Image: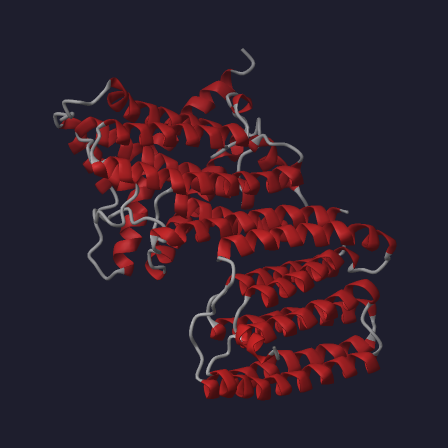
Length: 316
Length: 218
């Protein structure tokens, strides 16, 4: 049982991410409210919402198939799995070799496919509309995401997130133009994939503009709670992937359990900054028309590809 | 890699990024601002190369870049679009995502073309030759896909930026006489284009260059 501390830590980290994710959501919402000169909601509001939703009775459409009932659990499971793969606090994750960055993108894709299928399952027009839009965004965001990952993978010589973090955290100081390009591309993908403002507005229920909300309109009670929770874990996972690729400093190495408090503090600091930054970005940007979303995402793809090309050019 | 060379690489990447931004930009005013910023990046990289290699004539060309391409030409272009009263959106022949994809293709082509050449060079900045060539080709593309005369001229000027950068990265710059000549040409060219704009508009009530096809004699 030489892996025992590793496995214990793996479980601890997964549970930590799942429990802390709504807090991040609450922080982003609070920052947004401050920037809009509103009285901010409580930091713990997402938890209260989840608790409220979990107590209610679920209403399910008469024509709903089992797929509709299963989807929230699949979504939650996918996001939890993603949270287990991404090195959040330390790089010693026994489960991490199970999936590299490509499989990680696949996990997100699986969640997307299920939510789109469930949205179409009910047969309401909103569900179909939301599913189509989500797939449009998804199929444009995925290649950009993969290209971003590849840039970091080429620099560190591995597609394993833990290895990437270990390599990048130990390198001597050097300016990587390729990583700068990849970081901008990743930010754009993060905004699109998490239904944030230039692409989708997480707070709107206006039928002309909503994408993610249109898909989950039919859900209620515990199903809705699981989906909301999965959404906040997704945001948390994306942010920690961004930290892992671009600002990996402070993370605890394998076997250095003493560095864990420092890793925890640096993570909290990074998340606070990233959450506030996200809120500022959302306050400054306006939501773009749906038909401009391909342009936004093709720019992200372009930046990611440029980052990779420049990496090759500078290498030779 | 030394820090200076890394810094030049970063500026080169910025130059390429601005070239792509110009390709995707719809407003003429922003296009002019981007052109000025491209000049800033170019001048900064020239100064870094000049400082690291001790090539004093590069300081002159850096100053020339700042005066001409960051201050004078953007100012002239501002005056021009003010007096022509054009701030409308630029019309493109291809839609923007397609143009961007074509741009990526051009960048790959330029990088592949430059790699064997830059392996022969022994300058500090040899790895940026591919970026310089990509900038030239992207400016070509911009001249091709734009309908109106003003963005085409900005594309032409951006192409000159790319050429200048190529000269700096491959051979630490051209002789000062040549650079002075090119700079003067660009300046005079801008003024002549300015006069042309007025003539084109007087003749056709528009700055779309495809109207010029009517000038043919049957």
